[in-house]
Length: 415
Image (cartoon, rainbow, N blue to C red; front, side, top):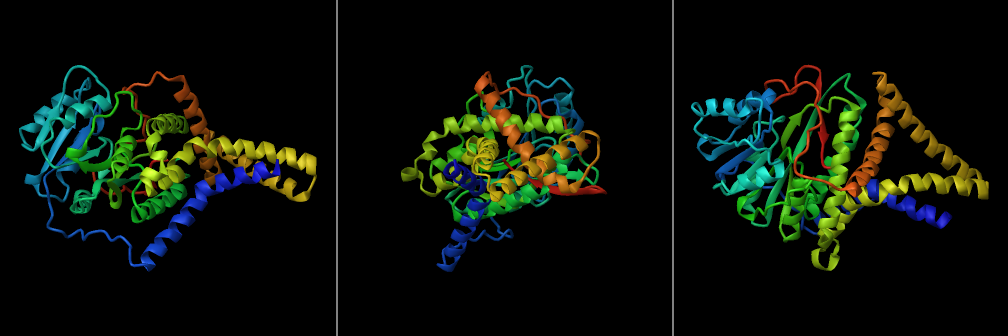
């Protein structure tokens, strides 16, 4: 039991801390050998034509802000094309966009009476795009003004197939724990993405802002739950690199409540298991080398290994403490139970609208892993399709590309 405990504990610690330390060391060694990667200057004159694609099913509440933000981006107007995919919308979105076309000739609309789902709509939209680069951005997000300029510069490198931007959550000082508690975790994720880019490639992109070479797009299966993740990993599997650009970011408000955030994370986790099954080829290190190492360590283990290890660690620890009786094992058990006790306290206080920052980290860590276990159950039940309802968000973003009064940007990424 002790051997099993330490093996499982090693896997859990490696997933969340060990991998980061190892990649940091590898990147440092690479720099010492003079093989470090450097990003191209953002002042480059390389300004290709780009299509900004915005899935906008029944997004009338935020369409005006999104359109205004898209038109205000720092990029030559004659090289920026807008495509709003509002297929099946019943809230007046299509009519509103058609009215705006008279003012903005670079605005295109993909409508239709039937709701096909985001995946199929995007597959159809990609057939209409003529520009060499395409950028996807959600309708309920606001982009920073330099997002496109900071993104396209990376495509001067022929090895780069896609650029993953950053997602930032704007939280109020009194926001729910599921929104405020993720700050520390996502800052660490941002740090890991920088390291992943320097080592080889990012393993996963946030759909809120994701750019790629149009010619490399391959249709995604209709029932795919994490289309952005699948597209970016398949590009990496073809030998290309996906790079991270922290200065191209999309801002949005957090989920309306813990339950809404749980719904979102459970769907993401189910998509994670679906992706692992469909990306089994990436598990071959002899074929993919660094990509396999990064994919397994940074993604697959977070979904398929560690969440299942954590409850086993508690059970093994309790059994060893009872059988062995040593003070070390009892102390370790008390520490584990205390951590999860703090997480439960954070959950109970949150349900009463009482926030304690000291409880955010254990709450969010536990919440995240519980959602993975629930996501596994959802994946096992099957019945997935490309049509799903978004989690309800808190109040919409302000009509600007900056955080409003009392709002603090919090980094977010693919879990």
